[in-house]
Amino acid sequence: MKVYFNNSCKICKAEIDLYKKEEIDEIDWVDITDNELAEKETSKNSKQLLRRLHIKDGEKVLGGAEAFLLLWKKMPKYNFLYNFFKLPVIYHIFSVVYEIIAFFLYLKNKKQLKN
Image 1 (cartoon, rainbow, N blue to C red):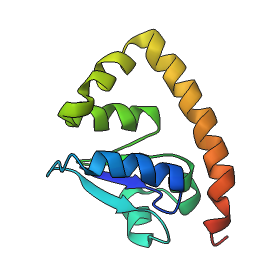
Image 2 (cartoon, rainbow, N blue to C red):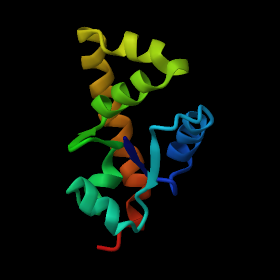
Image 3 (cartoon, rainbow, N blue to C red):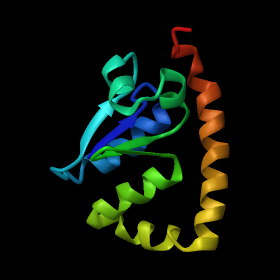
């Protein structure tokens, strides 16, 4: 499983650094900053990758709240988050809140886009 994240965003980096400490062998962490290979692997452009967290698991690419659920499911320490946020009503609220936060982080970090 590959997790595509923005290492140049201080908030994103801080959160991912917490997850990296878990040292889960099956997770590869991929910085999307100026990373054409990440674009090819996910079939997403740099704007789409910058907009939200993505995970490629096999041939499937997930983004946003759905990607976080898969990440937490794979990490024993954070499995409680998966169990809580997968509940239908909670998931809906989580998805909306995630998109709002991700949008503002995107606005803050979009200057790193080449186009």
